[in-house]
Amino acid sequence: MEAEAKLQPQAAETKTEPSQYKILVIEDEPEVRESYVDMFEFLGFNIDTAENGMEGLGKLKKQPYQIVFTDLNMPVMDGLQTLRLIKKNYPDIEVIVITGFATIENAIKAMKQGAFDYITKPVSFEHVRIVLNRCIQTINAKKENKKLRDLNEELSKLNDMKNKFITITNHELRTPIAVLKGYFDLLEMDLEDQVSDSVKEYMNIIKSTIGEMADMVENMHDLSILSHYTGHLNKKRVRVNNLVLHVYKKMKKLYVLRKIQLMYRIDDNDPIVVIDPHKMEKALTELVQNALKYTKEGGKVLIRSKLDKNKNQVFISVIDTGIGIPHDKIHYIFEPFYEVQNELHHFTSKTEFMGGGIGVGLPMVKEIVEAHNGEINVESSPGKGSIFTIIIAAES
Ligand code: ADP
Image 1 (cartoon, rainbow, N blue to C red):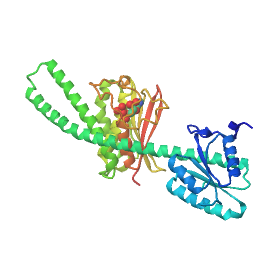
Image 2: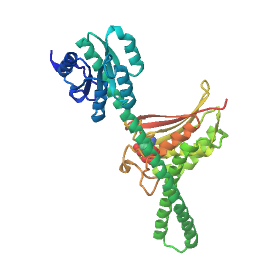
Image 3: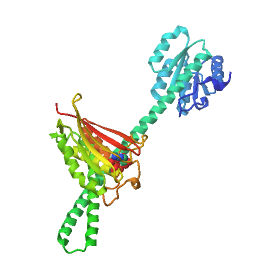
Image 4: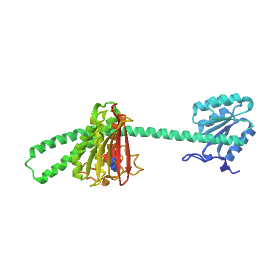
């Protein structure tokens, strides 16, 4: 039998080499101790020995071991006490106890005190191999769990930092942008008839850029506060068709400029929903803006409201004939700051229309919809188009 064949393969990304695990064997009888050493060495483990619990604990203090293999009946300090002290001081070490049939109750006590398993005498090589296999798998699983927990903690810290950053940036940006906008409006009024056409054009560019900045900061602001203030929705009874028409009218002009056909189809049942109209309008506008951004000239976009009477739900869809979203990217688009393409792939220019965003639009839509206990769905076919659907409860 080959030594490598003894241990089963472990889960990917975990250590599999027995030599990477250090085992401390605590056994008072020299011949028995030697037989354990032979067995573990044959299996390829890194072995150390101690004659009793006291000596064993001394060794644990000096260097790390992953597994302790201890007899229960020993002079100086018995196995149970040794186990108690190991588990108290080194909870990550797995302890396997060896016991004769006469002391099986002790084995049960040992299990209750945290032993990984027990092996009865006479010790069978096969039994030891199986128990060690499980033990290593448990050690590795615990390690992986710890890694995941640490990673999770790290991510949540990063998320907090990101939120703080957004909040601070927001506060710092909102005021100067408001000031800029205010003074620009004054300047525009004062200079109204005194400037040449080319200066007027420059001023228009400045104005629309300030508008874009204001929108972007507003979106970031909404995103940063929504997750904390979703309870603060100012809900009202709203006719879904009115909401659709309102967004349609607001966006129509931009669509004409881009030579994309914007259409709407509303439900004859004129469904009513109880929502925060301002927030839901923002969400729907965002979807219609995205459809505009990611659709080529000559394309079509439809805003559609539909009542499902059986489910008592309203479906508000924005259907475009745009570039679509690759299947493997679709799950990420609701993640903050995620963009499938860079701005070069946006079909609008940065200055003339809404331009490329920063990937906070869809997360904001999701937050708003979920704050209304609704759902946002997306179906997309690259090169053909996308359908974003907001599903919310209709008033019963
Ligand atoms: P952005 O501000 O970049 O538009 P969003 O959060 O609104 O950010 O959208 C995230 C990404 O999802 C976009 O960068 C884009 O790649 C993709 N996307 C969103 N809407 C559409 C759409 N209607 N068609 C194709 N891709 C879209």
